[in-house]
Amino acid sequence: EFYKAKYNAKTIITAVAPHKASSTEIRDKIKNGECVEDLLNPRVLKYISDRRLYADYEKNISRIREDLPKYVNDKRIPHVLAVEREAIKIGTMLNLPKNETFVLSVASLLHDFTKKWSYDEHISFLADNGIKVSDQYFRSEKTLHELTGAYLSSMLYPEVVRATGECIAFRSI
Image 1 (tube, one colour):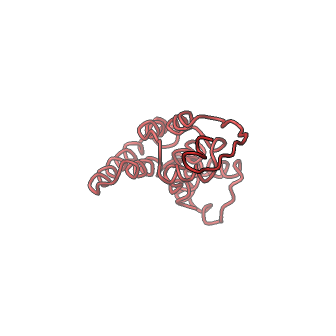
Image 2 (spheres, one colour):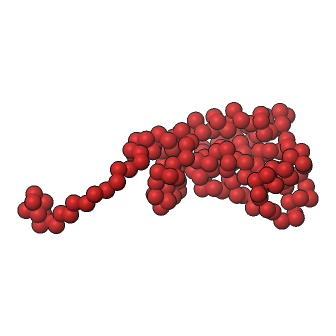
Image 3 (cartoon, one colour):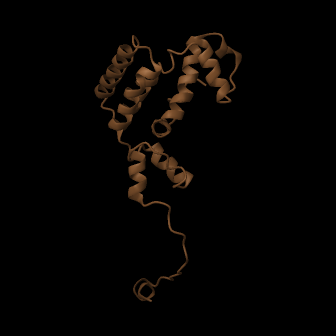
């Protein structure tokens, strides 16, 4: 009655199922790189991802840096880190916002992902994950690491890849 009297509004009371998580819990999950697809409407998730909201950039970058030795040859790691430093310098020179510099960092760190794998390891990874690709990728390990690295990074860091607009994960496909 209050809203009708004050605003001439019609009030309808409905039963609504409680939400699976609070907004604070969802923001924390996003900051921690956890999956929230089952907690949000796909359009809301897309909005958050497109704007890179709530990301803990340094934590996500740190996770990738820690994993580099698993997927990049020891002699390539200094190169990957140097590429990241240069990309950040360019982002700074261009006055890019933090979220766009984050994309540069992620792309730099992941650009040689799985490069240390043998040809057979690339082929096994593709087959084990049901990834079908054109024959052009089977001709050279140089192109295979782009593809397997893209897929693996999207599997290991789904929230990070989503936050970068998926440009990292699917740059080679």
